Length: 371
Image (cartoon, rainbow, N blue to C red):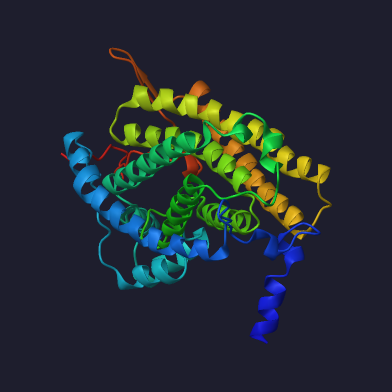
């Protein structure tokens, strides 16, 4: 049964165009082709990424947070109550009005006290500012290094300037060492993000992030095996360039460099719209939809690859809507504008993809800070 499954999985018509077989992609003296076994390197690379990230956050990001005086906010602690704690843990963090009345009867507490308890208990679950700063710093550094490496790997390649060159000689295109390391680093990074989801800050778009990481890994794996490597490197470079500004804006925002963070967010918005809503669909997806048909009839890999690119594009549209809504609030309904020097604070964000901060308050509405 396993042998039959293996034959079906590696059936040439799934991965390669008609009249092309795996034997045509055998290594020779002057050509080395991508193989599925190369993808095994992503797992040890992901584990190394986690170790490097731990060292980075502990020995670089944390001291930097101390220098910039980034401190976690002080929250009021919810008073011990086993009944409410059981409800909070097993049923809901936000009780309905009917449940609040029911809990009032069970605890003999007034309604206001129940609501205050749940608000304080939710605040205890919120991740600290320093942890979010360290995570954003790590992602920002990685995206910078990955984008720089991508530019160095692509700047002298003809398919960067003429997308028809992506399919020149396809699929008999020799793998380059820079492509191998670019793929390995990117796949290792996204595998490490999936492995760290359980202890990372849980974002509001958690499900969308899981879909994005899974679709990205699927795309990278399939493009590697099917020798869609050239277009794969272009897709990675387009994604990394805007992510740098997003994570950088978060870092400066946590450090209270609000003017710098605001400027980076505006530039990020422009770059995101240009790369994800213009370049990605009208250049890269067009390149994978139209140009291959000039040389080959459509095959399963052609349809599968373009469907996965479309999934990414739908996520781009979703995030673009959330980012646009936040930019609208930033421009037309700023929370705070003060002069001397001018400081513009961001409004409370909706998506985690553009997550900034929210100042905690006490029950009487006063700001709570860590003195």
